[in-house]
Amino acid sequence: MTDRNIARHLIDFIDLTDLSEPCTEEAVAALCAKAVGPIGPPAALCLWPQFVGQAQRQIGEAIPVATVINFPQGGDDIERVLEDIDEALGDGADEIDLVFPYRAFIAGDVDLAADMVAAAKERCEGRLLKVILETSAWPSSESLRRAAICALEAGADFLKTSTGKTTTGATEEGARLLLETIRDHGNHAGFKASGGIRTIAQAQLYHDLFETICGVPASKGRFRIGASALFDVLASAASTGTSR
Image (cartoon, rainbow, N blue to C red):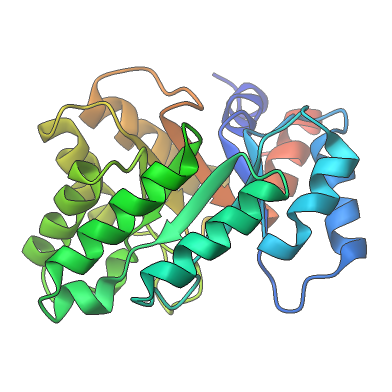
């Protein structure tokens, strides 16, 4: 495939994201306009909860709207998580990206983590639940693997690498571990690479890892890339055929 064709292909899997601080209504309006422009559409928009309603009003049902919950700290307050999910869904969110309570899990509170994901999944009522594992935060690969299994068994529809708010975002090592865990536990969940993905080569790496490890073609129901600046890079390449 040419760079132009690769870029057009990868755009299908982008969760076009603005989780900047501070994000503004004007920035969200511009992001929505970009999403429904001639290059696209992306798989979803991903925004702070307070902008879900605005995005839904601007783009309607053309593109799913995702929002983040328990973000970015990954706290342990289940009731707050459920209240925030209820509010987001009430505003029209189609997908929920939930930060796994990784500090509690590392400290040994496995039940709390499992209960949070399970309760969130029940609250989502069929909408996609992506669970953010923050793969760089774990003391060992084995502890991360146990957390990934916990999230899958509690009902996660996707495993996601990172909030993008830590020093280290997505890594090939962390992605491999999550993908191998998905493969080894039924191979039905999706995978979202997020955190510092800015080039076509990086995006292609995670796309190819998904297809190689999971053994199925990438589809937006199983594979996503969370990014902001990457969309513009892909759009430029898709329009002009610029190199990586």
